[in-house]
Every structure is written in structure tokens, then in C-alpha cells.
Image 1 (cartoon, rainbow, N blue to C red):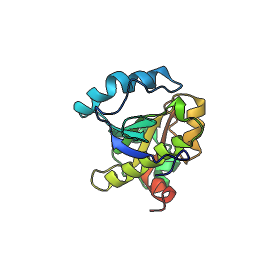
Image 2: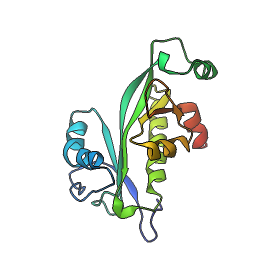
Image 3: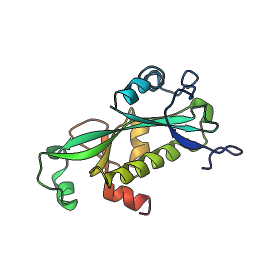
Length: 175
């Protein structure tokens, strides 16, 4: 996978070989999660953590995926009708819980690479474990605009919570 000139990046599940202590992004909560909580979440099977690495050790970025459900009442009525959402109380979804890029790799386009891999992985898994959308809680307005630029839509009942239907993910990825 291309990334920064002269470097080949690849995605790997989080492992002990990854240097989590050296990771630093613009948000302390995201740093703290990777350094102190991510390994426990993987062991307890509450989140799958994927790291983007140029060398098998350095963490250039990471994201987490988990199962999730969306209350059907949270979807705007016109959107639910357009998507032909079944009249269930709750719908299966995938939570993109965290996404962060190291300050060391700022400007290398890794945010988009991380997001596209997360969406592709969610779409692939939705074929074996049902998921009608990917949900994300944007940490701030800048992140919110980032997600919206890829087709994420607001869930009006929750500030900064957005979602993208799997149908849109498939179109975005050309699948």
C-alpha cells in the first residue's frame, strides 16, 4: 500500500510487537486508548484494533471496529424509507469506534487510507455478519466534516454521531 514517499504501509491486527508507547496524535484520549486500553479490548473481544504500519513496529495510525445496533427511531424517517429499512426496533451496524493518525505522519493522507480500510473491512464482514451501516462519533467539528466528506450522514438524535449505509460504502469503494 502506498503512503508516504519511500515507505510501504500495511494494515495488521494490533499485536505486542507494535510500539504503542511511541504513538502520539493530536488527541490525548486517542493516545491513551491505544497505549492503555486497546490490548485489553482485543483480549476481551469488545473491539478489533487495526494498525497501519510502515515497518511492522511503528504505529502510523489505527482504528477500531465493533458490533453495534442503531435504534430505528434515530434514523430520519425519509432516509429510513429511502433505504427501505425493515420495521425492526434495532438494526445491526458496525461501530468505527476510534480512528487516529500519528503526528509523525501528518500530511501523508493516512486519515483517508485508515478510513477506506475500515469501511472496506466493515463491508466485507457485513456479508457474513449482518450490518446495514457504519456508525462513528466524531470527536470534534473537524472530524465531523472529514466523515461527512465521504458520505456520512448525521444521526440527529446524537450530536456528532454519524452513519453511512453499507449500500453507500459499497458504491464509494466501487463494489
